[in-house]
Every structure is written in C-alpha cells, then in structure tokens.
Amino acid sequence: MKMKKILFCVLAAALTVGAAIPSRAQKFCERVRLSIDRPDGRYAAGEKIDVYVESDTEADLSVQVYLNGIVQKKKGVAQKHIPAGKSLLYSASYDAPTAQVVRVLNPENRKEFADIGAIVDAEGFRPGFAFPADMRAFWDKEIKAMRKLKMKASLTPVEIPADKVKKAENLECFAFEINCVGDVPARGYLARPKNAEKKSLPIVVYLHGAGVNKAGNRSSIVLAANYAKRGGGAIVVDLNAHGMLGDQPQSYYDDLNANALKDYSRREPVDHKSYYFRTMFLRAQRTLDYLCTLPEWDGERVLVMGSSQGGAQTAALAGMDPRVKVAVLTVPAMMDMGGKLAGRLSGWPKLLEVYKESETAPEILPYYDGANFLQMTDARLFMEAGLSDFTCAPAAVFAGYNVAKSADKVIYTNPYRPHSGYANFSRERQAEWKKSIDDVRNRFINDYLK
Image 1 (cartoon, rainbow, N blue to C red):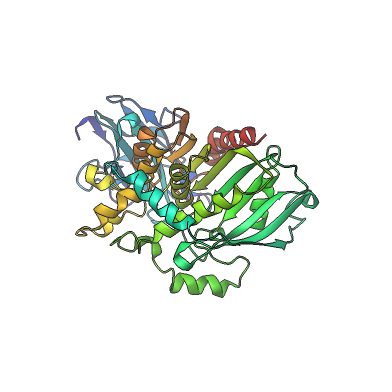
Image 2 (image 1 turned 90 degrees about the horizontal axis):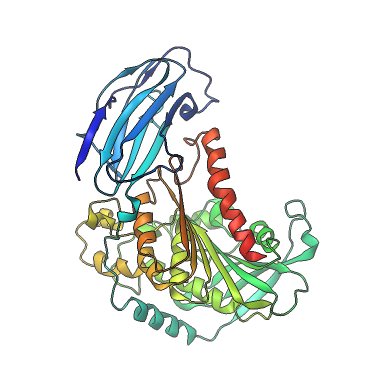
C-alpha cells in the first residue's frame, strides 16, 4: 500500500496530561477529543485525512496508528507536544482501499483511550476467500438432511413482566424448543400479539452475539415481547445461539462456558461435521422452518437481525433461505474470514490468524463466511460498520457488503463506533451515532413491520 503526503505529529511514548485533569467520572475520550471533517468517516482515494486533537490542557501525546486493523509499529509514529485547544495530530492520504484508526492512550491507564476511524475507497474492498462453486449445493444438502428429521416443537407459556413491557396483557410469550441435528435443539422465546388473525403478522428472528455466560448471551422474554409490539405487531423469536435453556441459575451458564462451550469460536476448523457454526446456523434455519408453519404468518414478510455473531447468523440464514426478505446486520462477525489473505485483519473470530499453519481452515471457512452468504440472497440489507471496530473490522464488513447480491442495500458508518463496550465511546459521540444510525435502523425496522 502506498501512503502519500503523510504528516506525523504523534508518538508512541507516554501521554502526560497537565495537572488540571478533570475527575475520573469524565471519560478520557471526553478529555482528549479526536475529530475529522467527515461525519461518516468515508474518503475517496487520494483525499487527505486530517485528524485533529482537542484537549483542555497541554499534553505530550502517545499515539498508535492502525491500517486495515494492523498496528503500524515502524510507520505512522512521531512525537509532539500539543497546546491546550485544538491542533492537527495526524494527516495522511491513501491511494488504495484502506481503513485507518488513530488511537491516543491514557498513560495512567492504558485501558482508557480515544479512537477515531476513517475508511478510504470503501467500495474497493473485496473478500479474501473466493466464493466456493458448490456453496449453495453444500448448504442445500445440509438443510435437506436436517429436514429429514421429523420436526418436534414444544411451546411452554411464560409470563411477560408487566413492569418491563407496556401493555404486556396484549401479548403472549412461550419458551420454545425445536429438535435439530447435532443433538442440541433450537431454544429461545417466542412472542406474538394475542388472538392475531391468520396471515396477519410478519416474522422477526433475533440472533445473538458471541459468548456464553453473560446476560446478553441469553434469550430474553422482554426483548421478544417488545419486538412483538413493533410496527403493526409481529411473531418474534429471540433464538439462543447455543441452544441453551433460558432463565437458569448463573452456575448453569458458567459451567457451559468453562466446559462444553469453552472457546467454541476459536476451535480449529478441521471438517464440516465438527465445525461449531454448522449446527448454530442450522438451528436458525430450523427455527425459521417452524415459524413459517404458523397460521398467523402473513406468508411474505420475514426480517432477520443480529449484531456481531448475530450478524453472522443473519447473513447465513438470509443466504440459506430465500424466504428472508430483510436482513439487518450490525457490525457483523464472520464477514471476510479470509481477510488475512488480502493483507488485512480477518473478520471475527480471525481463525486464519490463530491457526497460521492450518491446512483445513482455508478449506472449511469459505462455507461459513458472511461475505459468501451475502452473495446468495436477494434480501434487502441494512448494515453497519464501526470505523473504530477491531473485532469485526470495517474493511471486512465492507468486503462483504460490496459483493452482496442484493439490489437494495445500505451501509452506515461512524468514525468513533467501537465493537462493544462504550467506555471509550464518548457520550457526545454516542448521541450522534444514535441519531444518525441507531434511530435510523429502528425506523427502518418499524416501517417494514407496519
């Protein structure tokens, strides 16, 4: 990659802020503020990216520069003492597709930092893996084998907490279990309006991010019920990624995390049968098969959505099943899993980086790559890439978006958006992100469900 006109005004040394540092209650990224001139952080090839820093006190700055997710240890580093106020920190231009992140670290606590991302020629990224010629045939065969297993579904009524769901009395909710291949059933919660007429409701499938024993890894009655009220009402499933039981003691999830599901995402792919995500994706397919048998489904609308690993499942289900009409993928994982082959950071879980000498990983992973699933669907796509995301790198997300088959697709970006955890995402920037992306996404979903 050729870099032009690079002005270095930064360094990887200790950051020393003046004595008048505000209290810890104020985030470091609110005390040392980074900015660029594009709210969406997108630039054309050859355009200069000027990164400015603003501080209430003078400071000696320590900065890391990342290109396409990879830290630049020998380039992009210098030292400068900055005055109080706003000044130029870093400037560069690129003549090829490039994702750039500039990070300023807090010397007192290196877990505190300020990030700002930008992306150049975003339309130019392409996946590292080629699309397998038998991709469709492979998944059709897997689905056909699964469907030979006679479906057995059970619904157990559960109470909707009225203090967390308004007008809960108008809804009904069930813990569901559907048998599937791999000896782990599909499980979660299903919510819908009571007494809905036949062929009156759309389907919504909500899919979960990575992890096992955190609260967000469990299916939620409240989430399913609140989504069931959106638009004109919907049949909503909050599908657990691992087929875990809901509403269990914490020890149940901790045991799974420490044993049966330990490091599930980082296991080496040695064959399709044992690769963990095969059955995860098939449980999503099994769930949609069941939902499409319900008489309340309008026979047309199916919206699938998820963030991170949930975005990976969303891409997979959209690619596997043409009944999916809308797919909402928020900072999706498993997108461009072969990014390393193109000199970039691969999409989570970055297995080519983990298993550098593996002969099987490059053979197995293309069949699970979200970028390849997106080449198999005509569904409308609403996608988001965080330009300060190191888990699901923006270059990887754009690589998938750019090859997506859909004629109706949109992708949103924000320079400050990390993957998860907002300790280094200032409140002001969060408000901007919510207004320009999150609220837009919610309106998009509501409009479709009307």
